[in-house]
Image (cartoon, rainbow, N blue to C red; front, side, top):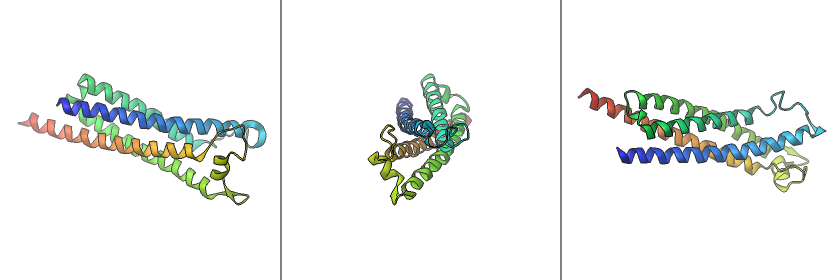
Length: 179
């Protein structure tokens, strides 16, 4: 049982790192994009009108995911997951959040692929941003979104694995308790 606890703690650490990496890159990209939009050349109310909605949804999902990872870490350390239905409750939370990460990261990936296809003056936005030809005051790049997508899908896989292991733990504990 100690080996399972150590493995669970390591999975929580991996989840946390992936979530923080994804959140950090996308937050930086969103901040720079917001600043460039509100600098008077586009929409001064881009934040208020929901123009950054997919970025915000991803940031919300990764933020709450961090809370769930920390909660899972605390529950693992204190032994709450070993109590009756503790692993089942954690399975439900992790499975729902794996799906939530799947949706929000897929939406972010759609934004990224759109930026890679849309052209302005026959050059994609990603090439402009990566070469910093559009506005050198701001530092937003498609590689930041790519890092967010990789972090999001990695965290989703880690949450899914954690959910499966929690379900298996619940099934095994309920079999032993019925003997």
